[in-house]
Structures are given as C-alpha cells and as structure tokens.
Image (cartoon, rainbow, N blue to C red; front, side, top):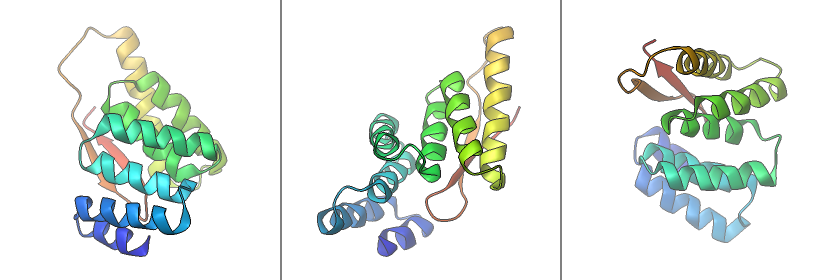
Length: 143
C-alpha cells in the first residue's frame, strides 16, 4: 500500500492502481485497499469505476472517512451534488469537523446543491481535484 501511496503522490496513478491491486492480492479487499483503488480510478478520470469501488468501501465500513470523502468527490464530479452533500455530511460528522478538506468539500456541496435547486442551468461547474494527504482529496470550485 505504501508503494501505491508514494506513486499517487508523484502523479503515477496507473502504477499506483497496479500497486494497490497487488496489495489486494496480499491483504485482501479490505476498506483501505478499496478506498485506495477508488482514489486511483478517480485520479485517472474513471468516475464510474471509482464510484462503484468507493461505494463498496463505504458498504464494507460506513465509518471510514477517507472513502466517504472520496465518494463525495466522485459524486460532485458526476453532477450529483445532493447525494454528495449527504455523504460529506456523514464524513464531517464522523471526523468531528477536524479535517479542513472535508469541511470545504461539504461547503462546496451545500452551495452547489442549493444553486442547482434555485438557479437556471448554467455552464458545467469547474471543479478541481486536489490531493491532501494519504487517500484524501479536496474538491475546489470557482463558485
């Protein structure tokens, strides 16, 4: 897993995904491995695969905050701000509001979900995914 994390930090997402798959063969498909595989797929732009794997990680352990956060990021990227908001709220509560990136993701999801309810359809939102620590991502937006 540590090899995969270092590869993710250096932007080698495909190699990181392979390292995580090797780790799965060694330790099994636990929540850490599933979350890491989902994160690598997210960085590779494979949003459907990332969502499926991260949902599996959350099903395995509904209290695993990194998987919840990354699932929320995927949902935002896929244009599902309402569901992302719910997921970020869950991650925020489990994290006791200690992680700035989760707080920021929740703020963006709230703003986006409220905007999508009351505003006229506009251009595609401009989101940027930024890695913050091991297996954690923050979603930045230009609202």
